[in-house]
Image 1 (spheres, one colour):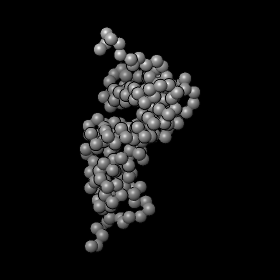
Image 2 (tube, helix red, strand yellow; image 1 turned 60 degrees about the vertical axis):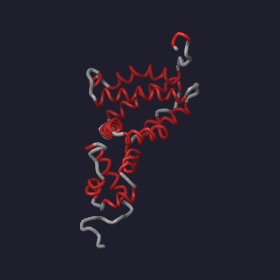
Image 3 (cartoon, one colour; image 1 turned 45 degrees about the horizontal axis):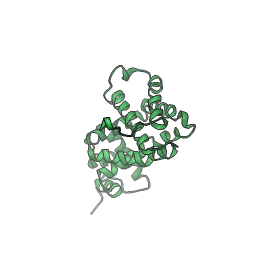
Image 4 (cartoon, helix red, strand yellow; image 1 turned 180 degrees about the vertical axis):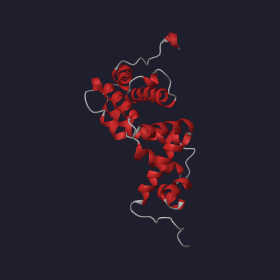
Length: 203
C-alpha cells in the first residue's frame, strides 16, 4: 500500500515530533479532548505510527507527562539541609507553576488526573517513582512514605485551589508569600512529630 500523501515516514525525529504534538494537545484540549488521530494530524504522520511508538492513548499520555513534567527541577530542590527542605520545595514548586513554560503543562496534567482515572493512575505512578521516591529516601525520620504523601497532598491541594479553581485571595497572593506560608506545614509533615498512635478515647 502506498504511503498516505503528506504523511512523513518514521525517522529519528518522528517520535519527538509526535510527542511535541501530543504535549501541545494535552495542554490545549486536556486528556479527554486529545485523540490519536488529532495528534497524528498535528505531527504530520499516520495514526498507525503513533500507535507503533506509544501503543495507546494512555501510553502517549504517560510519555508526554514524563517528557514535559519538570520532575528533575523538583528533585533538585530536595538536596540540601533537611531542616530547610520544605522551604526549598515550596519555593521551587510555586516557581514552576508560575513559569509560563511549565505552568500550563502542570495544570493540564492535574486537570486530566482529576477527571480521568487512567490519567490519575499514570500521574500517581510517575510521582511515586520519579518524585516521591527520591524525597522519601532523603528523609531521616520514620514513616517516610506517609510523610511524603502528606506533603504531596498539601502541595497538590494548593495547586488545585490557586491555579485550577483560582480561589481568591489565594490565587492573587504573591507566590513567594504563599511559599513562605505553606513551608512550615510541609516541614512538619516531612521532619516533625506525627501523632499516629490511636488512643482509647479516639477509637
